[in-house]
Image 1 (cartoon, rainbow, N blue to C red):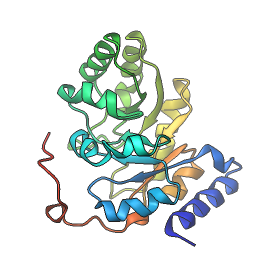
Image 2 (image 1 turned 60 degrees about the vertical axis):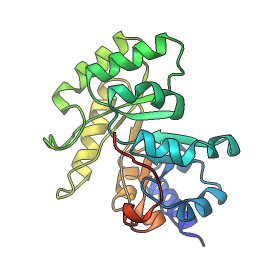
Image 3 (image 1 turned 90 degrees about the vertical axis):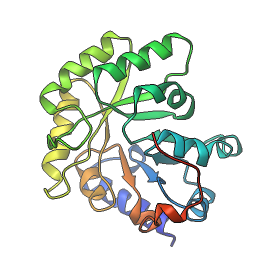
Image 4 (image 1 turned 45 degrees about the vertical axis):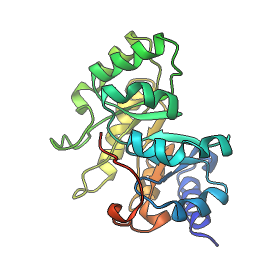
Length: 228
């Protein structure tokens, strides 16, 4: 059994244990900073959904491959700067990191100019960590109202729990915010805790190291400047 197949089996078992349909959970392969030799076998195995942190890195890695693999779906799971919005709208099928009004306004403006609008998620900083992106939980309802007022349809919520805290309370908090706002898509859970996230209602889990192994030193990966 391949590593990917084993992860899918674990997702299936967690979903069934929670009385859920495993088909309702999407595996997002976190390919950020991975060498192509690590990504290609997973792609060839049938994995179609990949998560990237940086607009420029994703553009360099997937620019040509998008045309070779028409079923490919790229998700932006890292912070998005407003000056990269136009490029991001043309590259990603899902943007999971809408976290402030200025970004929402910029997305709405570019969409009004005819740019394709990806499916959108609001990122919630469930741990209220000052160093981490995401809207604070107490402000999430307000940002969702702003987004909807701008004509943006928010498909889901995303969160990255603090590394030094049990993740389940954060998963449950995200699910509560989603339910209060009529949202049913939840992007939560990573390599160490995706099964728990599935049991808490995750509809997509972002798995990197458990799928690809530890990321190599980025200085060893041939690519141009990735700064944003």
